[in-house]
Length: 177
Image (tube, rainbow, N blue to C red; front, side, top):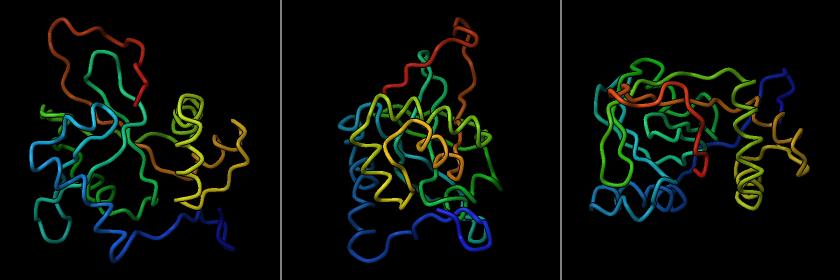
């Protein structure tokens, strides 16, 4: 969706019981139940820009590489999401996937890179993509091009862990996120 001034518009962040329900996965990660989510969700730690306090949010992995050193997430509520704004200020952080913690550095992707990722994601998860489109108020008609266009208004972030000796260089992606 686009505002009357041409600015991409996404739905507002959740409040009340919807926010509490959306935050439930954070508590499950804290309770040691991160493996329940497999590689579909990760816990992102970030530091508040103003408060300096440690914050946590659970995000869906929309793509990851096959050697497990890069995860891509999207800010479905746009660039105003607190975690996104906090990563912009301090891109070095830690994520947890399952029980494993990984130091990562955030890399902010271009709209075209995000569109490519969203198109691949939609082909792997058509039902989830439709639900996300409704949830975030992004206009899609079910076609690949409409998902690409909608994705251009969503910020995508790749979280890169340092490469370890023996990791493949720029390998393929295991995008079952």
